[in-house]
Image (cartoon, rainbow, N blue to C red; front, side, top):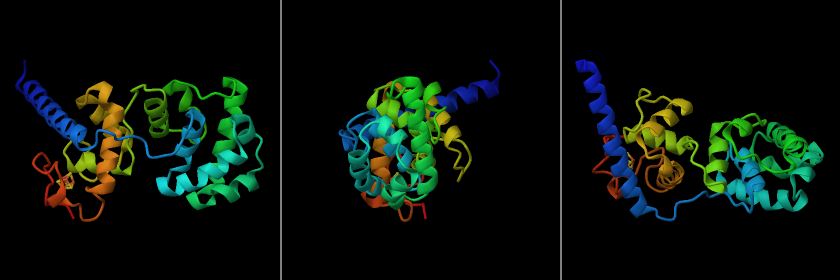
Length: 228
Ligand code: SF4
């Protein structure tokens, strides 16, 4: 085998070893890591995840109980008046586009899926306002299907700091970061890993001034005590 191919294999092997060490530590740190968006079914999780774009889970969790009380099914959401929905979801930002996406998505759910949320990546990413991140949240969290890794702002940042992506420093290409993570993590851990990294990003490895002195990953982290 050519020397460069051997080097590539060795590098990938080292990345997998690092990823598994981090994964095992995260399991001890956050055994209960789960999605922070309140939901009682796949539809509520799908809508909450659409609302979470450019917003916080706390804000979404304040809005969704009101939204789902007013519109408790896909059919109700599909026939909502846009202006009424906009008023409810306004605190989450980008409320006009989100309203359009929720209403149009729910129309498709009613027309093509009997009002239910589809269970495949292929079907989910055709829905308005649903990209891989949202589909991964729904598939992994509700349907327990590990089809990908949820790459939100926390996972993207931590993957960079922890050396788990080779997209190039400061790259925010979520699709590429997801591909890198999928190569080095065991598939049955993809969803847990996403949730645990999000929890760690909120608590310790925050965007500005990560708390490296309180971080249980610091001995594994190539960016420890060197981030901004
Ligand atoms: S050591 Fe610092 S930079 Fe690395 S994961 Fe922990 S908090 Fe983040």
